[in-house]
Image (cartoon, rainbow, N blue to C red; front, side):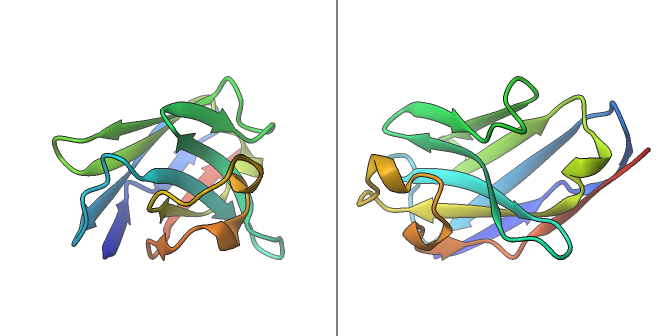
Length: 124
């Protein structure tokens, strides 16, 4: 299974970006999917997930970010609006193929497959 993350870039504060994660080698339609991020000098942070058709968000992105999936394209996305400088990080997509329990949704080690990361930089 390979995940390819894309869509990162440089944007001014208040702007928007849409990240994509394309999968090959596996159909994602029933998998649990997520986005994490890692800022310089910080731990990997949970951003958003779809678990059993329900969406979950980290507190710092609620109301600004939206996770979605496109089963026809075997992709999933992260729409990021009202970006802030503190959103600057490398963003990673991740997949758990069905064994994820509720209490582990935001736990990086619960995910089996990871994309390579895409850099998002928000300037003030």
